[in-house]
Image (tube, rainbow, N blue to C red; front, side, top):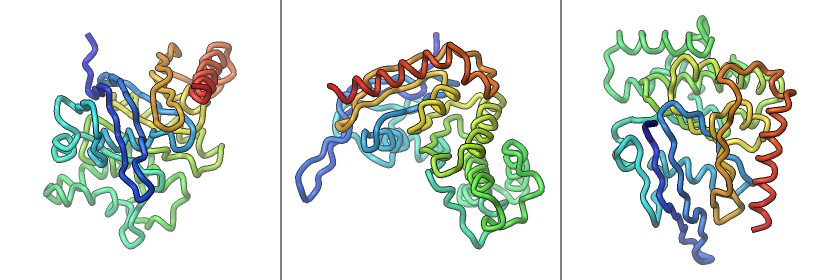
Length: 258
């Protein structure tokens, strides 16, 4: 039986604002199993990032129950159960790439020798060997995002949460990083939650695609992706890929109509 590492039961989240309450999430039910690659897709403002932030313990649901590795999200955050990759790389310009990657290890009290070993391993994972002494401004946007992923992987958490990390990149770079991310996932077997606005990206990367409605964010469809784990880019031209993309598109349309 699959092991659920993230379990959401009827999760609601309402923000109190000066203009009155805004319901961001309504009745979200979802299980994410160990080793899943789950993409969240939906229109802007539908609660994709908000739900990811709830998983990370950065927002607190106002209703329902949410657990991460059997803990509350707050407990999981304190236990450093996940790494988080934001939309922007968020690298400190005065630190080298190695300095940025090892920052969480410094905060967590790793020895200098352990820091160096972890940095070496994760830079190898993201194909940035030899760039450890460079500064962020000396790297392309795609390389900076890979460094951001390396930083999230540095302390070897089992869960990786990614909030539209490739959205600002051009299509060629994005395709390349999608391939690299799939290879990284295959090597590490981590559980990944990934926010995207791109249907092809969601279908290409995921074992499971979660389609969300406009606010208040609800799940309108959960699509188990039958594509093989090894996926060359040209699989996007296949009949199976196009059929899954069509179902995602139909789910997005149905969400608008509800």
